[in-house]
Length: 146
Image (cartoon, rainbow, N blue to C red):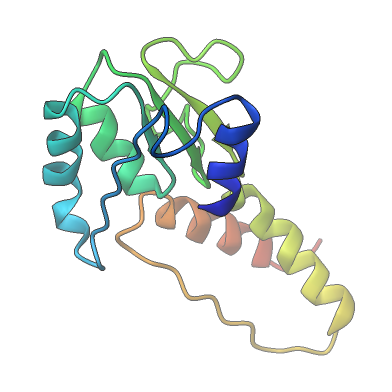
């Protein structure tokens, strides 16, 4: 959050002086996201900033008018967050790390640095909206080369 506050300061916003920041944490209870997002919307915040994929989905579900700025590792088009990257439409905008698409490159790197590796394991959160996408990409990339 330090970078976030620094970015605000660079644009003239200082917490406690001319901007208030409302923080919400789930403490691992992701099922609270919808409730927390609704609470923020009911407080009539000016903008919602969300990072985790599920937090972005919760914010989108809570409002269609208050701007939501996100960063995420999912494909925001595929997951229905925005219509297009260059013209997102609606009230959501942000950026994506497209981490799913990087999985194939990561596996390629492993093959280069450990060419004799017979088993490579991946831990994937099945509840993460991008989990299935990452698993599919990883399985396709793991197929023997032809």
